[in-house]
Image 1 (tube, helix red, strand yellow):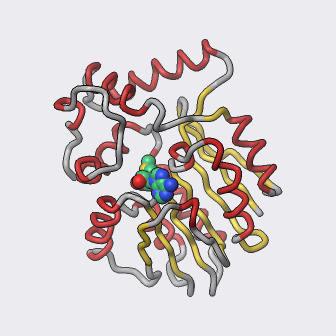
Image 2 (image 1 turned 120 degrees about the vertical axis):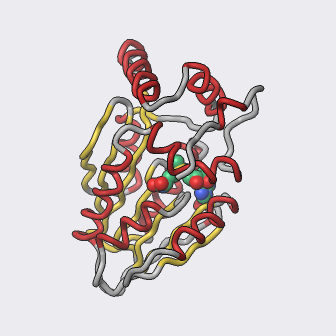
Image 3 (image 1 turned 45 degrees about the horizontal axis):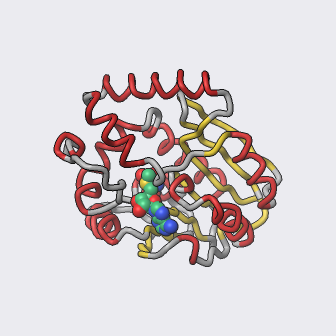
Length: 240
Ligand SMILES: C[S@@+](CC[C@H](N)C(=O)[O-])C[C@H]1O[C@@H](n2cnc3c(N)ncnc32)[C@H](O)[C@@H]1O
């Protein structure tokens, strides 16, 4: 795993992109930036184990290097289903293809380079949006969730992990400070943290927990179950 030092060198105010450089260090970057990321992968496997059905499709939307796709495969091992993993970054898909080529398993993975807002989800038993919805323009989020809901079988599971924000400014400020503390302990410098924060402005746009709950209900999900929170990062399970 190559260590993320991107914001040691990057100056200026160009917005964050999932480009070749990010794809090269992404495994390290997400582990040292998102508290609880490895647990979300373990839980994707657990959830896939419970919800995957023979003859169905599991989706990993915004798959990056395919770590959630692999967790879906691990959880559904022995089931006669398949995974479709989608990302609109060509660089991510290329590296994902290399990573998955080394993996062995009974559940096949098809990689698709596409915008998930253009994708037709069909016959889904499990859908993972692991830290992806926050990068979709806000006006498109409800339509995306409705399209996912339409393509899910009854009783199927959507797993969403996100960075969240808070109406209460004091809460938001405390958790932002603690998150920076987490990143400092992971070896990032104050400068790297502030450069990346600037680069992500207008790119990663977090919602509040209430906005997530309401949107998921509006999209038609019957159950919305938060199952994890660490600082300002949450994971929800939404069931059709
Ligand atoms: C934080 S990463 C997701 C991490 C990944 N799900 C995991 O569990 O390791 C967000 C990913 O979403 C992808 N993405 C953002 N907007 C997208 C869109 N409209 N269509 C497809 N992929 C998108 C980015 O290219 C990036 O790889």
